[in-house]
Image (tube, rainbow, N blue to C red; front, side, top):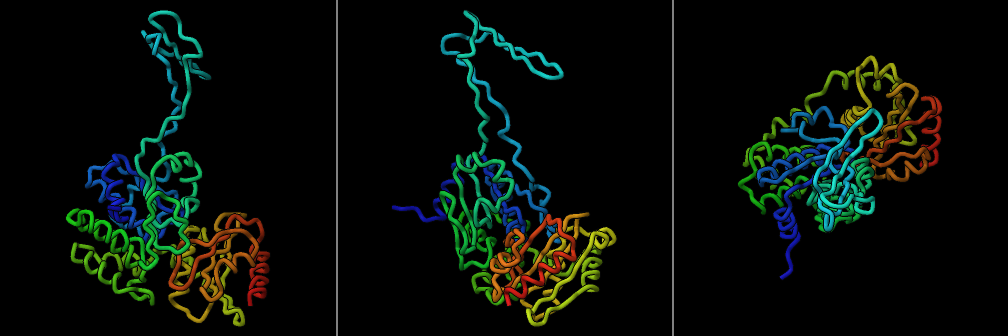
Length: 383
C-alpha cells in the first residue's frame, strides 16, 4: 500500500540521525518560527539538528524561544580527506611536521614504502542524513547556504514544506499546500499527527507566531477556518498568544520609530499612479541608529496607517555611497511587472503584507536624486 505524504516524511525522519533544517535568505516570522519549532521537535526525537539561514533575524522576532540557536552557515564537510590503500602494504606509523607555509605528513609502511599511487584524495562528506526546507519556493531562495553547498543539496534527501503556488517541487518529498495560510499551519498538522505529546508551550508558541504573522493576527481576508482551528489548538497546548501579538505588532524599537518619522517628513505622493514614497539618506540611518533590515518594517508602518495606494516605496542610502529601493507593491500592479519596468535588477521578496509584495533593489551606485527620477519614470510606464 502506497504511503501518504505524511507517512513518507515520518519514515525519512525516523531513519535520519542528523537533520539540517534550512530557511530562506529572507527570513519571515513564518519561516523563522516554523524552523525553531521543527528544530525543537526533532531534538525531542533525539535527532542531531542544525537550523541554518544566512538571513537577518528581524528585531521583533528575537523574543521567539531559542532564536539564538539558528546558524548562518554550514561549517561541516570542509576537510580534505587523504585516503591510504592498506590492502597490501600495512601502516606502521603516521606523523607530521608543520612550518609557516606547509605541513608534511609521513606515512611509514611495515614492509615496502608507500607510493603516490597508494593515495587518493576526496572532499569530506557532509555528515547530514536529511535536509528539510521551510517556506522556500526554490533552492535559490536559500541564498548562500545553497550556493556554497550545492553538492550537499544534490547528494542528500530533501523534504520541501511550503504553501506557495510558485514552489518548484525540488525535493524528493514535497509537502506543498497552497490552501494553507502559512507553513506553520502545515507544520502544526504534521507534528500533531506525528507525536502531539511532544508539542510543549515553547513549541506551540513558535508555531502560533507563524500563523498569527501570516494571517495578520487573523485579520487577513484569506484567513481560513482551518487556520483558526490550528491556532486555537496551539493556544490550548500553551501557545502564548498575547506575547506574540505584543512583540510582533505592538512593540516598536526607538530606531524604527525615528526612521519612520524621518520617512514621514519627506513623504511624497503621485496621485495618478496611486503611489506614495519617501527618501532616506545615510545621515538619516546614522542619526536614527537604524539599519537596512528595518526598511520593510517602515513600509509596514506606512501600510498600517494609509490606504488607497498601489505602491509604497522607500528610496534610501543605508550604506554610504550605496543606494536601494524597497517597495510594497499591490497585487493589482503585479510586483514582477513593476520590477521589470524599473529595470534595475533586484528581486521580489518572499515577505508580503496582505495584498502587497515586497520588491527590493540594493547596492545601486546612482544617487538618491537619480534613483528618484528612474522610479518616477517607471511609474509613468506602468500607469
